[in-house]
Length: 315
Image 1 (spheres, rainbow, N blue to C red):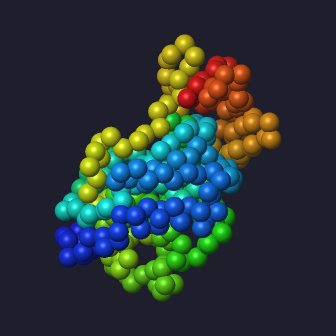
Image 2: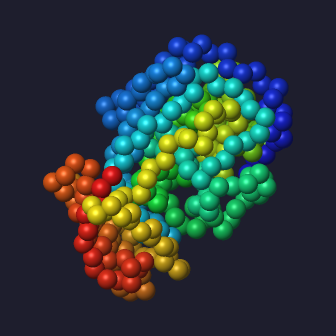
């Protein structure tokens, strides 16, 4: 992890970019990457709203070992990106998304152990590291408690799809309004050892500040260095709800992990996540129902003791 004193960032000037120029930059980051057909950007007052269904057009879930027995289901998401970002005095953390990729998929910190404290930020949380514990697919993401797909590390598959792939391409935006780049400086030069701060960011001549991905933890945005009014009200994806009104129970990671996990997507909208645990086959399957936003689920999971069940869940 590359860390410098957070207070050093106070010497960096706040954004010199004009409000309208920042809106244009957010729009361009989505359209130049080739995702304008799936992702919309609407600038309202002091925010650019990046809207999508959080369901990317690349392989998902396959190869996960430390599964939480949740599965990706489309979820409408509207990410508010500040248009007049200002660096703050202390890093902000939350047990939810810190920003959004240009393909509309939310970006979380690298952990899956709840909100990090100030002390947690300075020390690698190996037991909660989603990369090291095998919780992520080869694309850097997985499905969370809301059965929503999101990234916890470098979104490699998305970056490979980008029309403007390269070191100068913005791959996402943090909620504080600052851009996210890959593992090199936008000019292609190597990021100097120790240049990235505790949130995995550094000063930027255009935007005032920028975040990066990295090969080592924290892999991606770990916290927010900008001020975020209404921080506690930032969007979350709620868990699926059964037709009778009860919420879906959370999955529990099977002890020791699973084998041969594969997520298959069929042209008719059916989805199936199949895996083996201690030699026994398990699965989570769903298909769109006749009601908008609802899905017919058939499951046999380690969490529910291997009992095959069917139920309708809705967004």
